[in-house]
Length: 249
Image 1 (cartoon, rainbow, N blue to C red):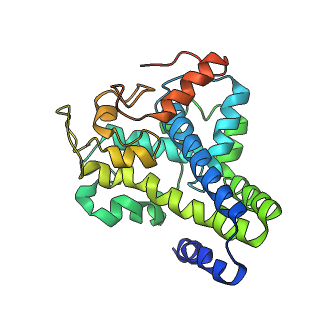
Image 2: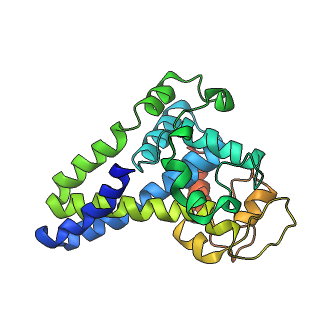
């Protein structure tokens, strides 16, 4: 908890270093780039198997996800599968019914849930390189932090990396918390999931959460053309480039 609190404070040190245009641009690129690795990689690929990648691109997607500092791909996806299996019941580890702050971030900070349950995601735990990333999930964010400093100096580290990481955390966590209490329901699912265009904007399509709970295996979460889902658009581009295969709709 102390380290998470410290990371929230670090961007404010920019009052001593100054804020540069390069650092701000870097922060925006790191926010949207890493959001894609979370939404397309950790979520739609590892948790739901909504499309296929070869082993090289699978590793790239996993490594990119680790740079978001949301733990390893197997930890993330394994707990998310648990969420879908027990949505909004007593066994759902981050249901808003247990309180907003618990569902938003409390459960992540709880030592009880630090362990990766490989038996829940043994379809990907068979790959030693993915297991390595999951057990050494610090490599990605530390590497990106150093690169951010080399690109834009102290402002690049404080604003470009730490600042965008904190914003990325809370935008991602909104799907667990707010997307179950704020929005509309198109489908009468057994959980409290809701569609929310504001959350969808900041999470590249993850805010169409009621759609997602209705058909979790779909790589597309914005079911209609007006439902903004850039993660899906980029996956379609990946299919054109023959990187992404067998997209489930």
